[in-house]
Image (cartoon, rainbow, N blue to C red; front, top):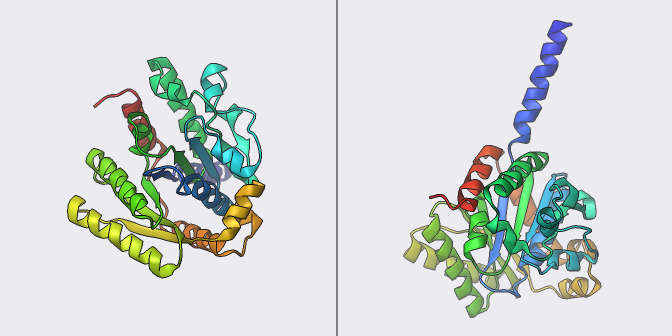
Length: 287
């Protein structure tokens, strides 16, 4: 009986250890209107369809774009965590294929102006919450602010969304430079959206990568290229995520390819305590 109990304890400990391995990704863009939130949502759904436990955290202040793209309204948002003293568990909503998400709502700027007690409550609850997930995707607002940087600098990877338009490329590089000057080790993953073809997408990636290598002295990997697919606009009008609206469209295939790439990487050694300690440091504004 003691041997059986010991084996059970060992198995539970092993499972608990695995639950601490997860991936945090911040999705950013240089300007609005490049498809950042559409990518965040469909990428998260695709990960969920592959069997991963995913939490999509909408940090695009007060816009509610994640909910608009799904055609549904969350009962609570992150603002209610503060204003109604709800727990993070209380404000989680369920999306397609078991995706969990936290809506941005309004008044999100309060989150970076918490007192010490509120920060401790937020980070403490977040530490418990993220142990239930394999991926936590933060959909950030366009550009980089002092407030959003606190979350961006705490994650493991940053997905930078751009289009082949020259202004979009310039803005994407500006965001990368801004983040690089704050932390030169966080990996960049580039997503080229609305590309007229594979060639244009590759050329866009090479342009950004070359500039980053020359002026920042670092590489930027290509996560994927999303074609300029008319089914995306159709899906947006119908408020249905395009990976559900037309799962065999070119855009959906591109998203699946990216999730296969991310899911095929070795298990992360990143642990809850590392993410939370970094986030605490930035929220408390400690050097």
